Image (cartoon, rainbow, N blue to C red):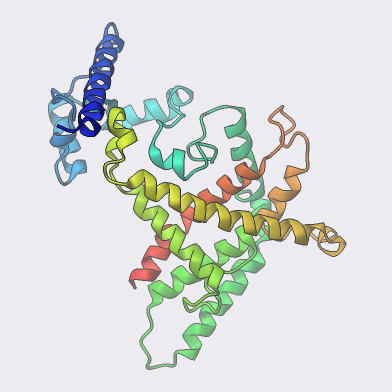
Length: 323
């Protein structure tokens, strides 16, 4: 056997043994809920089958509403009833609020700096507060009312132009209307230029990247569950994520810089902020955004926050693309 193949194989086996030993030591004195006996290396992954949600329901009947699975080397506790889930999501929310590490958050979401994957702490509370106050509050909804009204007007215009006897894809038009409204609220630009599904070059690039994010987010990556194999990137998922991140980062950086230039003019500065990105850029100049010691907002956090909001468009873009 070639040394180029033998040495990495031996190293992988050695790392596997170390991780397995550490896993056994960590579980000593830490009772876990009942669950099916895991297989070596792959754990309970073979038990899940082609429809994991059906398998989970069947396992819950055997092991109860709180059960333990080991997916590769990752211990997972499953809450299979509303009352048990309430214990995790409400009663003990602060203990389980941080998400486990994964390749998507690491390579795409700016190394856990977005609102979804950031660990619970001052920075996460800052991002949540910004989202709540400047996007989801009653005042913000009222400020952006004219955008929703204008996009609904575009929708009704498209329906009128179709004529009385012309079939229309109402689902697609509704998704386009919603995507354009969200795009204008977040970024100050429409995703689909005329409301029919066609947009400019930047909008088309944005759509392709968001769809790719949604695809990669649904890929099962072996390295997330068997850390000893992560460096091998057997499926090439990490490489695709890194490549996509470079594209998305360049796209977002360009958008942010354009907004900064526009915001620097006295005419724009005197006006009310017309989209979320303009608001974030203005907040970046404040030394303590939330007044609670959270510190300044960084460009990376702005781009990571925008990335989360863009992902909300992903499902609608899937519908538009498949219609």
